[in-house]
Image (cartoon, rainbow, N blue to C red; front, side, top):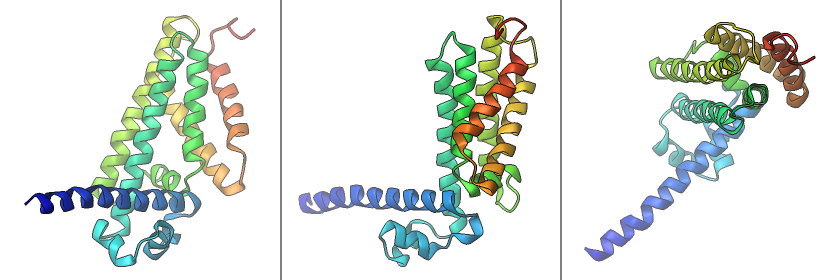
Length: 207
């Protein structure tokens, strides 16, 4: 019994490590190519596993993409929330960091941008639920940053939810353009931050 327990204990970490490698490889491929150009054989090769092994973890490409989508969008929301926390008391810095994070993630992943831009069209119910859930969380995090700025008199008294939706929409469009034109995310982020922040800033704040 002891031996069997030891073997199981050794296998579980190995299995988790292999699954992580598969998801990491898929994330890289979906970042480089549109969804239709990523094949399971490509993922297996990039992850260093046999194709049958890949299918033991993910039965379909859509299932694998949904795992990547969940991870990337969840991470994006967390990064935006962290921008608000780390720049507490400095709304202009917080909104700039949040916009930079959104463009950084969306500018790197063609499949993610397309899925979000099409609002989950072509995905199953789980995929659409992932998009809706994280989109709500993302807008809420951004609305919190805007509300902080309004409370401090740094931003104009706009509707925080409306402003958050406008920021996400603008970032999606810019990110899509970056993918098509091979633009620089840092330059685009700076330009978008300047445009949006000057529109939000109360008179006299930026001179």
